[in-house]
Image 1 (tube, rainbow, N blue to C red):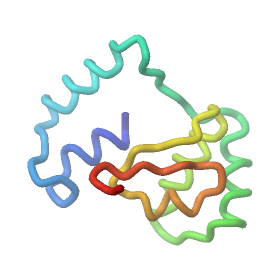
Image 2: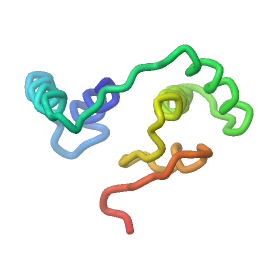
Image 3: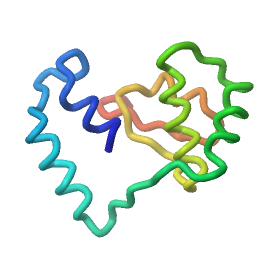
Image 4: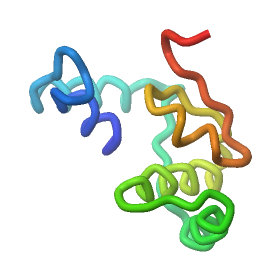
Length: 102
């Protein structure tokens, strides 16, 4: 939800950013869906991140996407829909779907 909120409210990332109230309300709607599962870092996430850093060297703020990938993998999530496919496509074990791309 952090990543969602950061993207949809950022005018540099989306053409029509949402207000923080609208983004919060939309997040509430997503969280209320029975099929929606919120994941959290586990005890293994930091170790997984360090392993990924050996395979996918990143610098600066890109480490946050790698941390998100480590959180996904340690929760059994192996696919992501994102407009930032380039960063995730290099991560072993993650399948990437970019909306609007074949």
